[in-house]
Amino acid sequence: MSEGGSIPVPQASAEDWINMLNEFQKDALSTRLGIPIFYGIDAVHGHNSVYKATIFPHNIGLGATRDPELVKRIGAATALEVRATGIQYVYAPCVAVCRDPRWGRCYESYSEDPKIVQAMTEIISGLQGEIPPNMPKGVPFIAGKEKVIACAKHYVGDGGTTNGIDESNTVIDRDELMGIHMPGYFSSIDKGVATIMVSYSSWNGVKMHANHDLITGFLKNTLHFQGLVITDFEGIDRITDPPRANCTYSVQAGVSAGMDMFMVPKFYREFIDDLTILVNNKFIPMSRIDDAVKRILRVKFMMGIFENPFADYSLVNYLGIKEHRELAREAVRKSMVLLKNGKSAEMPLLPLPKKVPKILVAGSHANNLGYQCGGWTIKWQGISGNDILKGTTILNAVKNTVDPETIVIYKENPDKEFVESNGFSYAIVVVGEHPYAEMHGDNMNLTIPNPGPETITNVCGAIKCVVVIISGRPLVITPYVDLIDGLVAGWLPGSEGQGVADVLYGDYGFTGKLPRTWFKSVDQLPMNVGDPHYDPLFPFGFGLSTEPT
Ligand SMILES: OC[C@@H]1[C@@H](O)[C@H](O)[C@@H](O)c2nc(-c3ccccc3)cn21
Image (tube, rainbow, N blue to C red):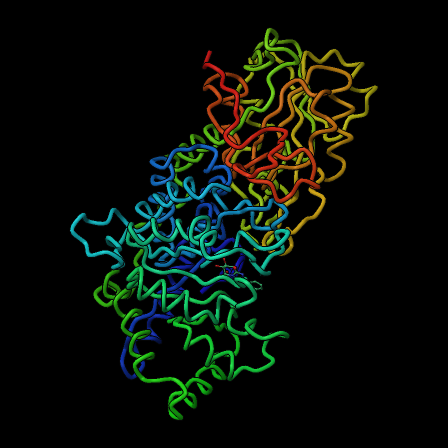
């Protein structure tokens, strides 16, 4: 496997990936039973660890599109780019239902509404292939060499932890668990998802990695899921506090709970020794081992890896192709949510005029591909800058779109005097969050990182402005809304920033709708649509429309 950012060599080509995997496979086939392996990676918004891959919007932006068919096409494109590198297994989609935007993984969640998450599991049909109608329920399905094994994650309730603290405790009753956090798995299993990854988090104080009732009792015996259940990275280590306090117990609890494959990247020899002792001493019945082995082999047979254990170079040219970038650009367009359009309905600011003498583009996120892609991009925690990623910044998208005679001035954080004294017709301000992933994104104040607020006030206090927020979630925007003329939630659009300019300038209309509530203040959190005391700045489902010009 690759954890976030682990690659064969810097800027590895598709051929480098294939050569590495085939070496591993050669070793696997030389073992006593010669059972081939598959290789897993987090391709969670395109093949995001891989140099020159297409980077799609993160899931929160896809939730804003309300377009399952689009997301299915994204799944198919992602599968093709993943197989182009010889990899057969992706740890996606995340079907978390984020209920508190203070959670560092909220952008990996399509929505606070389980129905939208269910709709977006259509990506599985793109990743694995369309399940045939006559397939028995719960059987994993993967349709050949341009498709991948998918992974619905993280089972279950990862998005409901208290105060959004990552890997923490989800304290709700069974009805709420089943009504809010389980529907994504119902739909994933209906679509033939081949694997399900267990959450680091706990439900009412019980670690999910040790939860026999929900893994074996419910997922396997009630829902008849027949694919394989995989742990998260060193997930069984974290059954104890501190992690690895009692490894034999962790192995016993994790295997007995019903997990079938164990992400044990470092201490695998110890894992094998512990498990062997536990089975030989009858703490774990052979029937449990047989169940796990059967499920792993079922997935391997289904995806044809026995027949074709080695990757070839036949698909390498699909990595980052133009058609996929156009698809990503379409997704960016459809993910933009227009929250404010002018200081009065009679005076809309958007679509912006293309032909004016001079405009200002400002903000920390206007000219930074790394920032617009967010976490899980090249590195686990994402990157900054334009020299590694291949794509279009929002600044360049604006330059590509305006009339050739329109002068475009870029200044990252201009002072008020500069803004007032240069005769700009209007400004586009692009600010937001710096990339993060998992617990590193847990944030209790959700303010726009500096110098974003200063850039907004300097620019929007002087001239007409549209502000595009690049973030993995709603942020505190209340103090600035009245100053701003146009406000767009841009989420984490990925490599194809041209999609932002497409709607700013009216080549396409705004259609995006909020996939989650935009709060007034963090003191209101958690606050989700349907809650009794629902008092948002912009409600779930809100989004202004514009017509293409
Ligand atoms: O990358 C593999 C999986 C990924 O699929 C899961 O969604 C995610 O919860 C995860 N966290 C780590 C991880 C966390 C801390 C240190 C090292 C690795 C690894 N992983």
